[in-house]
Length: 123
Image: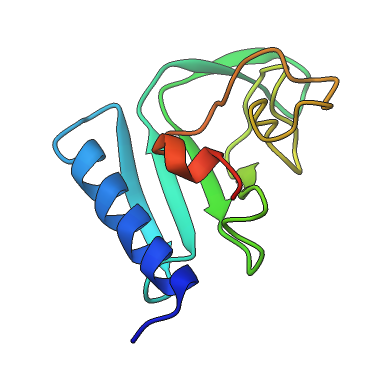
């Protein structure tokens, strides 16, 4: 019988796959682990980023990596952008997911990753 964590990872994968199926704006573009513990999401949305020369430019797609660490689901997922993005909740090393990190001074929204609500609530 699988462990509670493995069952949770399987359920989360099924939920994400079904919710994002056929939706062109957010796609699961890669996973690692069985069941998946690392996800790569492609957001097919126009957004801004800062080019190496300092110019603010537009990009048509952004890639987010989400790591469901060994502490998951008791600990928040670790999120980072793989493509540059110009947004107050994102930097080179992490993504602020307000619902999980209420003391984060950069957080001005409630959740910025496409997860089912169960994924954003610690046990």
